[in-house]
Image 1 (cartoon, rainbow, N blue to C red):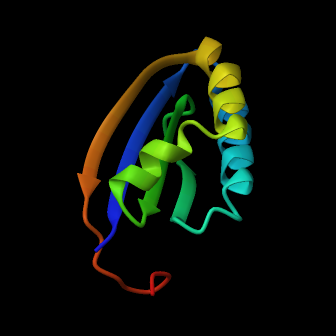
Image 2 (image 1 turned 60 degrees about the vertical axis):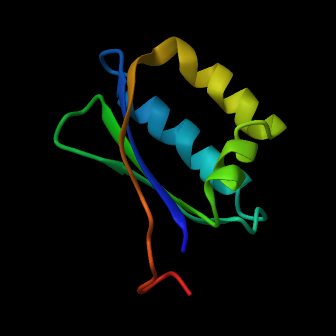
Amino acid sequence: MYYGLWTKFTTQAGEGQRLVDLLLEAATSLRDVSDCKQYVVSTTEESDTVIVREIWTDQAAHTASLQLPATRQLIEQARPILLHVERVLEDQPHGGKGLV
């Protein structure tokens, strides 16, 4: 069983796309991290809202990823434009298309 996480980010006005770009950099930095099974960045009709869907082998792997140098750098870049970060849902994905 995996560890899943949905996070909602709200940015300062007009900064939604900048956050999307930073989070896509984060996704790229995780390509060689085998414990990260999915990292999807999405937007909604609210221009300053970004949703990230993550699936990890387990919660410890997710926690460890927050200490990676690339992740730390991107967090520091994003922090000034963020108004709110909400952990919407933690779940346990069991499999399906895209997960082996």
